[in-house]
Amino acid sequence: MSYEVIIVSRKKLDDMKDHYRSSLKATVPQGAIFSAKTAVGCHVTAYQSGKVLFQGKEASKEAAQWQNESSTPKHSLATSTTQKSHVDNHSYYPPNNLETLTILGSDETGTGDYFGPMTVACVHLTVEQMKTIDSWGVRDSKTIKDADIRHLAPKLLKECIYSLLILKNDKYNHMQKKGMNQGEMKALLHHRAIINVMTTCKEKNLDFDGVLVDQFVTPSGYFKYLSNNGTTWSAKKPIYFATKAESKHPAVATASILARYAFLKEMDILSKKFGVTIPKGAGPHVDLAAKEIIQQYGKETLYSITKWHFSNTQRALAL
Image (cartoon, rainbow, N blue to C red; front, side, top):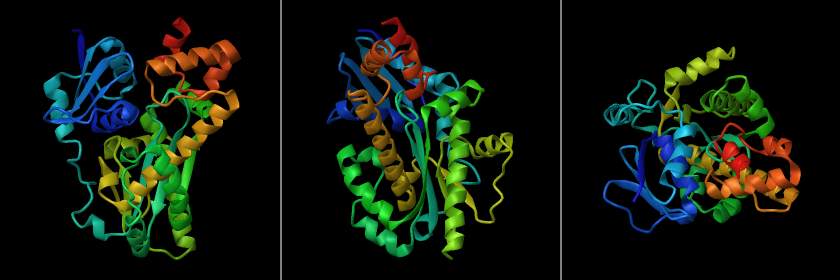
């Protein structure tokens, strides 16, 4: 049996679990986060350490899509594991009393999907609103079925103050072609969404204790991305960064749901426009859909609705 092993960040593990959500197994090996079996028979097992094992048919092909799209440097297993264990070891990690604070929470989705945009949401919740949404079962969008997100998100939109940004594919591809990676795009979107909510809070005389961003890069990397684009974090309120922030504060969990909802709506628009169901993720089934779009509408159309630099493009063109 052929196999491949790669090392990815915690954020990428979450993206992968979201991608394989429809094929997840009920039981997982000890130390694993999830286990799945793809449509072509490839077994995928992701571990807490960041190691992901691909076994069986097309293991190399399945692993390659994540290795190519990951922003994690290709280090040895020992080095990568060490780096992962210290990812939250910085001075911007949130305080122990985070759950008692009123926080602006920011999260994003769509980064691992070939079709569709990248979406970012920032949310403000009062203490009363946090109590209300707790009874609704608000939690990380990756643990909620899409059908439930479609039901829950409209209620949240009416309840909270938020900023929701959508980076369409044509703009995404333009930025990527200019040399901007996903991390830089996300930093700029998060920053803009946060500033938007801060402005609204000021207008409505609503106070908050700080900002929490679901960490996708080191704090120094985040600030560098902002600086490279002529902006800085100048607010007097503290900004915090943590992986799996959606499990640490309801504002981030709410942001993750709203970002996912916006992504789903955009995918619905694409499916309706082209008369087919546009698939999520970046697996082999996506390659087939991309090929169909090329045959019916041409490469230019595919370019306008996908993250063109993903390896799916070359695979679709070769089919």
